[in-house]
Image 1 (tube, rainbow, N blue to C red):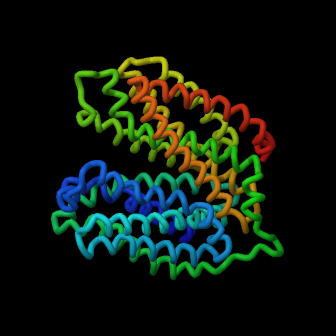
Image 2: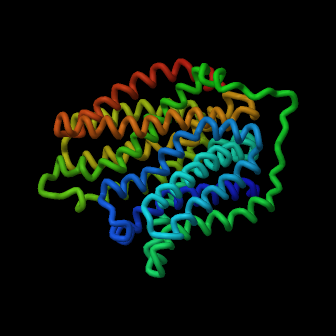
Image 3: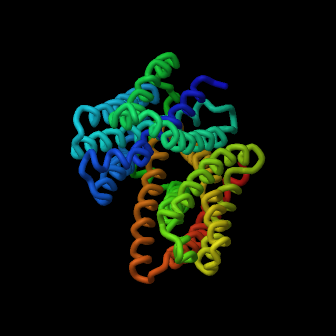
Length: 382
C-alpha cells in the first residue's frame, strides 16, 4: 500500500484518540479539577467547537500551503494542545489545550482527506476515505482501551498519550517528502463559488443527517432505551451508546468495501432513503428490542456512506480546491450535529420523549433525498 495512504490511516487513529482521550479519565479528572458534570462537558466539547469553526479556513489553508505543511502544522497543534495541560492541573489551561487541539484536528482532517483523494488508486478514493473514517472510530476505541491502563502512572497520561502519538507521526510525515502538488493553470475556487455549488449543499446536508444522527444516537440511545425500559437507568444502559459507536466504526470500514461494488451516488442516495425508514420506525415503534435494533441499523447506514460522500466531493471540484470544498461540507455536518443535539434536548424537555426527534429527522431525510437525487443525478453515470 502507498505509504502516503498508510500515513493517512495513522492520522485517522490519532484523531480518534485526540477526540476521545477525556471520557476514559473522568473518574480521575473530575476530582482533580474539582469539576461538575456540566463543567467537564465544557472540557469535552471544547475540541468540537474549534474543530467545527476552523473547517472552511482550514480548507483554504490546505489548498494554499499544501498537504505536507498543513499536516505538519496540525501535528504541532495537537502535540502542543495535549502537552500544555500536563503542566498544571488547571481546568482553564486544559480547556485552552483542547481548543488548540481542535484547531489541529480540523486542519489534519481536511489535509488527510485530500491526501487520500490525490494518492489513492484510480477510482478508489472513496473507499480509502471510508477506511480513514473507520480508523478514526478505531482510534476512539483505542483511547478507551489504552488510557485507563496508563493513567495509573499519573493523570498527565490522559494528555501524554495523544501528545506523544502526535510527535511520533512527525518523522513519518517528513519521510513522505510531500511537496506541494501543482495542477497546471487551475485556479482555486473562491469560497463564494463553493457556497453557490448545489452539490456542496447536498453532500453537506447528507453528511449532516448521517454524522449528526450518528453522534446523537451515541449520545441519546441510553436515554432512548430508558423510555422503553422504565425500570432501568441511563447508567445501566450506557453500553448502548458504546455499541452504537462500535457499529458506526464498522459501518465506515464496510463502506469502503461497498464502494468497490456500488457507485458512490447509489450508496449516498440509498443510505439517506433507508435512514428515512429507520427514523420513521424509531418514531413509531416503542418496543425495547426493536428500538435498539433500529438504532444500531441507523448508526450503520449513517456511517456506511462516509466514503461515498467524500468520493462525490472529490469529483465535484478541481484538485486545487478540494480541501476548501471538504471544509464547507464538514462545516455543514458539524453544524448538523450541534443543531440536532439541541433539537433532541428540546424535544425531550417539551414532549417527554425522544421519538419526535426521530420523526423530524425522518422528514428532513425524505426532503433531502428528493432534492439530492435530482442534483446528483448526473453522477450516476460516472
